[in-house]
Length: 320
Image (tube, rainbow, N blue to C red; front, side, top):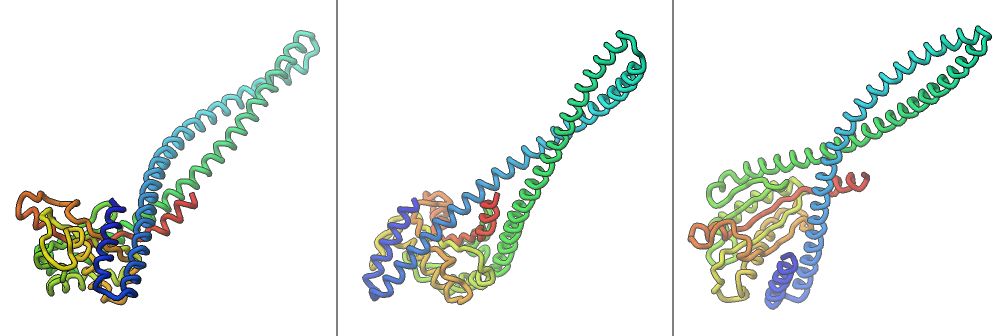
C-alpha cells in the first residue's frame, strides 16, 4: 500500500509539474522523497518501540514470578541452614566427648563423626555459595526492574503528552466540532478528522474560508509542539472523479487535498516542514458504507494523524 501511495503521489507531482517551473517541481520532488523516507523510518521505529514495550512487559511479569520463587527458595535454604547448624553443634559436642575417651570403639565413632562433620562443612559451603548466587540474582532483578520502570515512565510520559495535545486541539477547535470535525486518540496517536463539507467544495481541492480557519487553529497548537510528527491523509468516497483539469481521478484528488492542508499549516513558521507528510488514500480506507449519501459524506475527509517523537525511547530500548 505504501508503495502504491508513493507511486500515486509521484504521479500527482508529475502531473502538477506540467504547471510549475522545473526548479519548483524538483524541490517538491526532493521534499516528497525526504518525507517518504522519514515516514518509513518513523513507522519502523514506532513498530520496534511497541514490540519492545510488549517484550519488556512480558519480561517484567516473568521476573516478578522468578523473584517470588527465589524468595521462597531462600526461606527454605535458611531453614535448612539453621537445622544443619544445630546438627553441626550437636555433633561437635559429641565429637569432643568421644575424643576424650581412648577406647577403640570411641575412636571409631570419632572418625565417623569427623567424616560427618566434613560433609556438614561441605554443605555449609554450598549453602554460602547458593546464598551469594541468590544475592547476585536479586541485584540483577532489581537492576532490570529499574530499567523496566524507566521505560514504563517514558511511555507514560508520551501518553500524557498525547492526551494533553488532544485536549489542547479539542479546545482550539471547539468552534468546529460537530460541524464535520472530530478529535480522538487511538493507538498512542491523536487523530483530527475533518469532513469535506468543512473544507472543500465538490471535486475541488481549494480549501474554503471556514476550513482554512480550522486548519490555522490546528497549526497554532502544532507550532507549540515541535516534537510531534504530522501525517495529512486525503480520503474520498467511491464515486469516480469526473472533473476536468490536472486532476485525473480520486487518487489525484485525495493527494491534492492533502497538500492543500499542508500549505495552510506551513503558513505557521513555527512548524518544521520536515515533520509533515502528505498522502492520498483515495477511496480505499472508508470509515462508513459508500452505499448511502451519509456514509459517502463521512468518507470524504482529511485525516490529520499526530504521532509522538519516539527517538528517545528507541535509544533507551537500544541500551537494553
